[in-house]
Image 1 (spheres, rainbow, N blue to C red):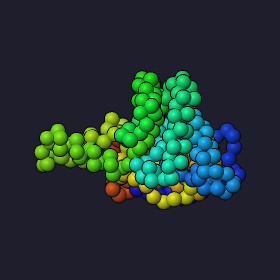
Image 2 (image 1 turned 60 degrees about the vertical axis):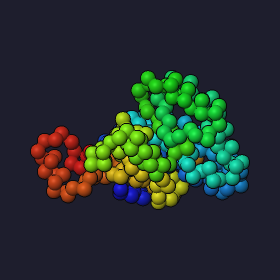
Image 3 (image 1 turned 180 degrees about the vertical axis):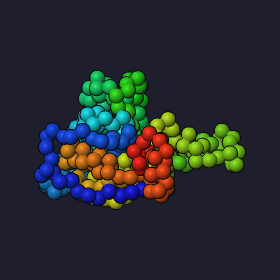
Image 4 (image 1 turned 120 degrees about the vertical axis):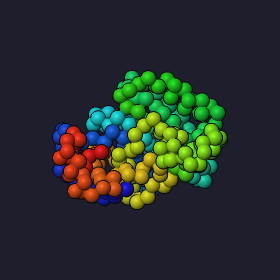
Length: 267
């Protein structure tokens, strides 16, 4: 993983943004800082979560605009159950509200919603709405939106291994590809870029298998304030990276000269 820490220079940003030279196919986002955003303004934590939800709508629209094909968002982790019960219930209500209010528009925009994680322990009505939203949008192709809800990266790997064992695959036949075929995102490319807001430098159990070679971009900005321009600058920073995947610069340059059709260092 490569950490990117350069802060956006918002003063230079214009409403009309230049075309991106390189767009990551799959962007994952740890939407962090809602509570701290609210606390700095003397507001209840719930208001931070509501404003974070409003911002998600804007970032989904920007992802489509910039040509991102897949976006994975960390909506609720398996560890979030340890938060105060009142906050957990609020987060569940917000998710249900988002489905009720936004589903039709997301469908019209061509967004395909997928759920990654488990629905065990989730209110049955909410679980049903999550499944129905996925089914309703399953044929859309403009943007795949993976919603990591009741999700944990370690739990995902454990469940993958359990499924492999149940399927009777011999140990000597198990490879990285085998495990990749049993995780939630088995039919999708790994994330090219993982963005984390609020200044933290950790994955927090998010896509720990898929993110092995992801570029990581961090920003001090809290999620409710992470706008279209800041998202754009994260994509620009990604485009400036040279992705080596364990190889040397000389190897990458040689592959490019041999006519693999990609810019040096591009996946």
